[in-house]
Amino acid sequence: MIVFNPDYYFRPDEKRVFIINKGHSHQSTHGWSSIVHSLHAIVFSAFQNNEPWDTVVERLSGFLEKPKIDVETLLQPFVENEENVYVEQGGHQFKIPKKILIQSEQPITYERVFKTEDFLFKESDYETERYLHAPLNITFMPTNRCLTDCLYCYADKKHKMGTPIPFNRLLEIMDEAKDLGVLDFNVVGGETFCYPQWQPLLAEIKKRNFRMMRPSTKTPLTEEDMDYLTSIGIKEIQVSLDSLDALTEQHLVRVDENYVSRIMQTLRCLKGKGFDIQIATVLTRFNDSVENLEAMFRFFKEIQVDSWNLTPGFESLYKAAHSFMSSRVALNKVRDFVERIKGETRMRISFSDTFFDREYGKVEDGSRNFKGARCSGLYSHFFILPEGKVTVCEQLYWKPEFIIGDLNKQSIVEVWHSDKVNELLNLKPRDLKPSSPCSTCEIFDSCFSNLNRCWAEILKAYGDENWDYPDPRCAKAPKMKNNLQFV
Ligand code: SF4
Ligand code: SF4
Image 1 (cartoon, protein in one colour):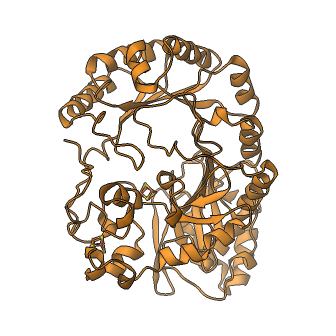
Image 2 (cartoon, rainbow, N blue to C red; image 1 turned 30 degrees about the horizontal axis):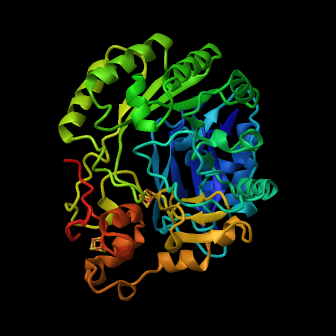
């Protein structure tokens, strides 16, 4: 039987449909997201009913008003396709991911089976990249409390949290998100395990089958915590650890002298209970020596840690980094070290050097070509603060200029279409200070409409009052008041 690959799902989006990847058990393309023509969605969704090939072809033949033989010819490139398929429809080019229709011996259960009507829109828009109806991904920060006080923390810890959003309201938001086809519902801290309702929170997210990043912690967990996570189907966890040396760790994250041994015990116990463990290490000049990292690596190998991510600590909006930032020389040595040990282990090890070399002041042709991950703010993602207010991006926290709504009073869709969102999306040169090079830039429209300027970096480089300045990666950006470059 030929079926629609259940690793993908359809996300109707007001004037078009997205095909999105949400799993990878059927050789699909991990992380895929592309706009397809309604006709493609109608044709592929016809294979969600676990029917014989002939039955589906016959139905499509009636719908498309084409002979069966022509429908079969049309479908052939999408059956067990090993490569992406490029198709033209109505004057637009579309990219269809690999393995869109696959052979299956077993019937497939889909979360939602679509009907033709789900893909019929009054108007079409195959150009706008931003998700039109609602975000694709949501992150919730239940608390800004932590058990540690990290030297390199980039969070706004000074903000005095107001009344947390009621848990029942959170459940309604999750239900709305599910109906809207939100893919990821993530939880980040502060420390998730400091949130009094962390257990039902994680359980409700799992119950709704959202994709979710593994919980991340710096807390030595109890066996009960681990067993609870197991009981709700969470077997992957991230533990942050910067050194095995008690004094270094005390200095970096302000903990007592027993902290390292308790975290080491937590890691052993997690492994004993079958968890997939990822370690996150922030590199500063206090822990970036190869000796420190060698000692960590030996221990991680011994207890069979599954992956290890190393990231340089960076300047944040709430803390200056000059006192702890690693030097380029040290980071180059870390890079060499990582390359060397990769060959010695099955552990997945990554060294994130995107902050390290951002090409500040070099990009000539606007935000589409800025180096680094694409900005998700206003494009595909929003961030819920503990009280229920919504901001464009995690790093901007409670900055009022970027608060786009309040989920205590508004739905997800209302926030995604709020006045503040429209204001930020439709900025014009006249809205900017004349001193900003963006206000006279000849490629303003394409640069701003690509939604890939990093607000957080602009604020870090030029101060809150200069939110309308160029992204510091732009060649027209003035000299940074606060240098973000690693030296
Ligand atoms: S000056 Fe501003 S609008 Fe022009 S390319 Fe640079 S960031 Fe974009
Ligand atoms: S504003 Fe910057 S930090 Fe925030 S999501 Fe966009 S690129 Fe990332």
